[in-house]
Image (tube, rainbow, N blue to C red; front, top):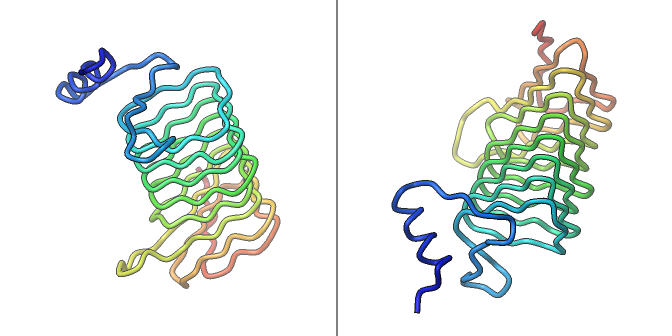
Length: 189
């Protein structure tokens, strides 16, 4: 029998939009403890989350690992560790431990532990990160870049696995370690 939440999800997927209250995550995952679909968590505390789809966090605390295949948008969240295959948009968010991302990444007014990423562009605005490792994207011959703006601080090194990287940094931002495998471009913006 179809529950009201499943019917709402099916209808929303057909229409292309959905909004859920903080408690209404679709729980019919293919793996125990894993969910999929479209979900919003509000001001609540969770031990760990595995999610496939579009996930929005608004003031949410996740003590352990947040694992997402899809899109993550977090505002005012506190996350233990982060793994994402897809896109990440953080605002006023803290990631206490390591972040491993394969896909688009942007953080504004956020604090992160070490970041390991495979992406064309990493954007950090008014943020602080422990260190950044930019992993090469196999088979693509592109220039990967890290953009640092509005007082962003990288406390350690920025290391590119290849030698085609660029670090674009404005006058208010700092890299306290060294930059390896990339050229540094000073931006006036």
